[in-house]
Image (cartoon, rainbow, N blue to C red; front, side):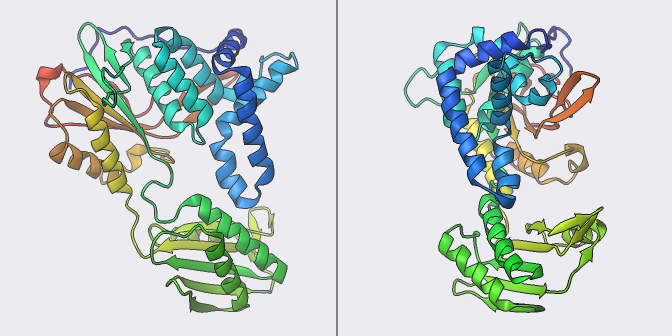
Length: 410
């Protein structure tokens, strides 16, 4: 594979001195009133929810908004961002990228990004697109924002251009529950209900819930599970079946227990594949857990994550023009290091199947990226995104010579 040396790399940098200007431009673009409305909704959700559902679901999905909220509050009080930009690094990353990309965007694209940020419960897809556009711009490519020529026309997110190379780039984003039989919001809400009931009865221990299909999310079903678990009482393991075929196995006790973190980690590590688990202790003493309640949930049907990813890759292929080389970028959450799973990973298998059966010879590669990681040195923050790229062995060089466009992180 050849590495193109003719493109001059550029940098988008954020400093404490230009942070106020970057913040001001971004807020002006989104709209102060619209930001206030969105933050009101986010704060209401944070104040209303509780338990694991709050900590494991609501807070993580609203983290970007809470960083924006902090920046808005600092600005409202007339305070300076000096020494505090690191606390809002994700928001300022987006704002600095948009500050650079905005001048080259057509009006409709600016409007689309604005509407998607303000109107979505999950900003990860739109932030991924902004992130990738900034990545290719910093590589030295000029960006052309694709616009449909006819209503309903499929188009890529943007086109990267230089004197030597030209790529269509399309982005897809997987959620943490993509293809999963146990959706996390429903799981965490169920765990909170079980924990509340068992604590009232002075019970703790292990609960395994096995559903015949997807984990139901209805309040009625959750109430039936909570009642069944509570009715089992101490002792076990005890098993019962609900009318819908759900199996519940409990091992509960009333006597106080102190479980080491090593013991809990070992029990979690031994759980079956595709099983979700949540640990809720009454308290901790050092690294030990006091009277932990551990809830496991799984389905008799396997997750369909690979099928879900392949579906997205096929959809992305249809977005590419076929008139130039194409690159597909797919965000997959919660992967700390793709290198540790690359050799036999599900992602490699999906990419190879896609190249073999579905991709045109103009598709150059598929890149998977994951959640941002922060490295802080002194007062400087560096953001890294784990990434891995699989290249199409059937790619035809007539579409342009090869280039290394993504490392193992960026």
